[in-house]
Length: 147
Image (cartoon, rainbow, N blue to C red; front, side, top):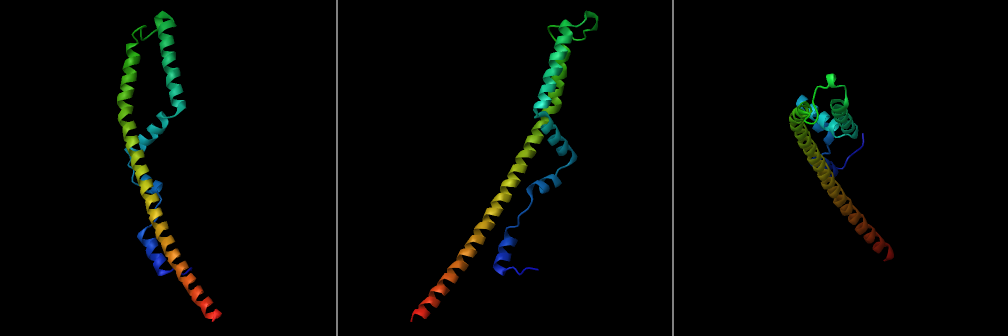
């Protein structure tokens, strides 16, 4: 087991480095996890391509399909508008929750980076102090030799 200097041990204890992502994921409840999955899904180009294909297909079928099989008459597309609005009502709050969770994760990561920087600064200060001590001892030893 390596021996750690007491001053360095104190620095490490004052500024522990945590894994922000693991800690953030540990705190999530099932609704939060669902919101993040929906946010990730709806933010993908594949999802928007699927929505575009669905909408164009719906409109094309109801504008140009066989008259007896059309279910949402052209040009109003009232059912399509209702489906889109309902989808927005369901997804919008979940997307906002997902965005807020993403922001809190980013803040947690920033705090970890800040703690790491504080720790690094203290470690560097300790090293500089020790180097100064070594340099002064070497200077004294060299002066003693030249006499």
